[in-house]
Every structure is written in structure tokens, then in C-alpha cells.
Length: 281
Image 1 (spheres, one colour):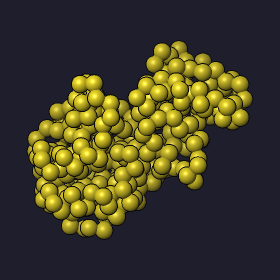
Image 2 (cartoon, rainbow, N blue to C red; image 1 turned 45 degrees about the vertical axis):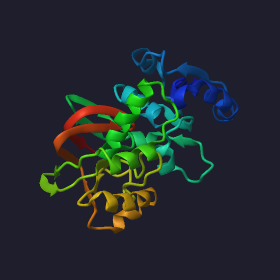
Image 3 (spheres, one colour; image 1 turned 180 degrees about the horizontal axis):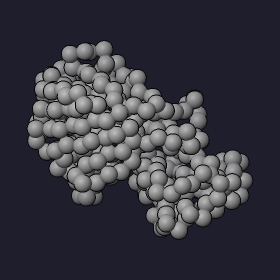
């Protein structure tokens, strides 16, 4: 049996439309399949009935893949799993694809080890990365704009506005595998499983999601103008050349604490009022 799980809420409510457009490609890959609506399905009923010889494909973006990963980790599913591009955020695909035209990814190697984050009493798995700092604040502001009914939200523009006015840099205490570090004027402090997050930002260019370590990428020790100048370089991973402002530390267990609470994002999902978080590879 083959299943395609799709999220009708993906890409601002265009998930069903994306599924309809992908049907022919999916039939070529999997033959006949049973569509499963991720909003309506019950993981506790679905996963125990999936057999080893079955194939499961998830259609959506990074947010959909995050939900699927957290659902399936509660069950010992041994079937083949796939991901098909069908949402706004596709940093996972950007990280693992072999060419620009690739839409389908075999998931099993990437799901053998997924990192966990513990924050505000909650523990969950994540796919790409944790954003803590100005990127978390951008997600918080964007969520508020969505509640006001706004749909055309430019995250890059929001980032620049907050960078110039509104973002207050915290001090950070970081512990990586038992070793403590201190950072001043922190703009970003992101624990990465992959190289990309935030819609194509190559924040951790040396990270390999198939290894058993994470990369903590910190942008720090700079004023607003210097930070504004380095931000565009993040999309190509060139920010790491600036050793005074960019620090990357690798490890298996990372705890980050800020001097004042801020929003944090997990694969694009916002968590408010965070003073610290811990990730384990």
C-alpha cells in the first residue's frame, strides 16, 4: 500500500491545490496511492497500521515535514518514506537535493537521527534549525501580522526593519558539550541540523545532517550598521569569513541562555518568551 500525506494548510492554504498538481508525478513514482489529509488524520490510528512493505510520501514544506517527523517518531515504522516538495518553506530540500529540479527525496537516512529541542517545558524533534534572536522576533511579528489578516508578509523586509529599529541585542551564555562561552551583542544564536533555514539562509555552511553533531551559529559583537552589511552574505554562507562577528561551534549537546526573554522559532514555528533552550543531537 502506498500513502501520500498532504497538508491542505501548506503554502497559505494552497496545500490541496499543490496536491492536485502533483498527482500525476506521484502516480509515476508510486503507482496507485491513498491520499491522507494531515489535518484530519489521527497518527495513533495511521502509523500502527503501516507495514514494512508500504511506502509513505509527505507532500508539503518544512513545517509539514516537522509535524510528520514528530508524529512518526512515536512509532517503530520501518517502511520507505519520501518527501515531495509542496510548500513555501523548503530549506530541507535545498540542503539535500542533488539538482535544482529535484522534488522528491528519500527520507529514511535523514530520519535515523533527528535532534531534539527542550524549551519552555516542551521537548520535540526538529528538521532544519532553531532560530533564536532576531529571526525568532521576525516570526513573532509575522504571526501578529497574520492575526491582523495580512497575507503578503515580506520576511526579509521585516528583518531589516527590526535590525534598524526594535531589536534589542541580548548577552548570551552558551554551553556546548560542557564547555561555557560568553557572547556580547547577539543577533542570532541558531542550533542547526542542516545548512539552511529561514527561506534559503545558509547559516551553517559546514553542517552535515547525516553526522551526529549540530552547528551553533552565532552572529554577535557588532552594531546595527555592521550587522546590516553582513546579513546578505548569510544567504551564500559567506558570513563565516568574518571571524569577529561570526562564530560556529559544533557539538552534541548545546544550551543557549539569553539575558532577556525573546521569541524562538523551530522550523518556522514560533515559541514566545524564551530565556533558554537545550538541543541534543
